[in-house]
Length: 377
Image (cartoon, rainbow, N blue to C red; front, side, top):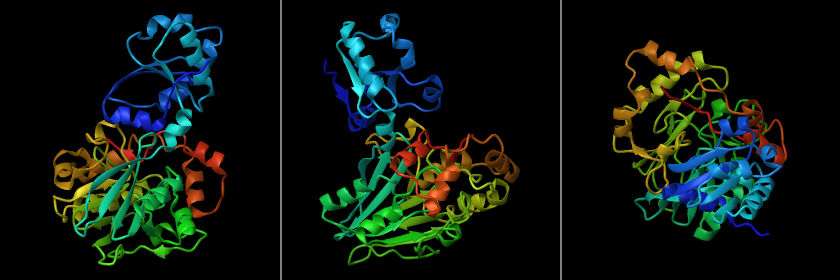
């Protein structure tokens, strides 16, 4: 029996289009409670696969007859088996999720953010399953990539299809929630790899030092792209202003939240830096800048086209983390009642430092789960 499948790309499209879907997740309950596919009009049932080994009869009354059902598991095998059982039981609108949550964690959806003044464009890569956001600045046959994930072929293939050469790869900080693909892209393409030096004191590889005011040349006419030192999430966290239109905030500022400062055990030490970056450095910038963060936390942060962005002035009006006037209250938000730390974040930091070299399967396991780089009220 052949069961129809839905790919990660098709799933991303259904989320963007706000389609209705029923997900039967057959992973263990603890894994499901920690992390699942989110959609505006999705409905869910979690029944572990081992509870269905003797048949699916008991769950049939809980499943819709007039709606597509997608069976989800960790890597796909179990979802195919359960989907086959449902079809044999008489259900017709049943699909298995191709590649499982592994594929969902790794899918990147490119979305055009806007045009640049020299005819170039800015592309956002949305990693819906992990909440990561990365970027490609394209100008006159050249490209710069900001905060790339370990799925390096996606960026290289996009550049090749666009007919551009990758000249620069930049990380806004040393990541602790996901493995950077920056060095690998640089090695494969000959691009320059940039990293804030205050985050790079323990790295084992060569890099270009990303300092305050550093201009990044992309294209022959060199659109204006420069670094803005904004510590707080890490001691080296750096933002980018591109074409005087876009503000890439890394993990300092998100649409519905602000960055956390404890992932290197420095919450008490770095909270003042975080406040200074948010309340002074960003306050001095134009309200019209379009904020492009390195993460999103909830599905409501997606725009109609699937992108994640908002005007800086709008965030200063509506983001709670930017409107805490009492410094002690701000400190309490950032240091008390923090969300769980990202899975394997210490191992991810060591990997991004070059101190360990896990294989592809190990890297995938290290990243499993949601992103947890934000603090919300």
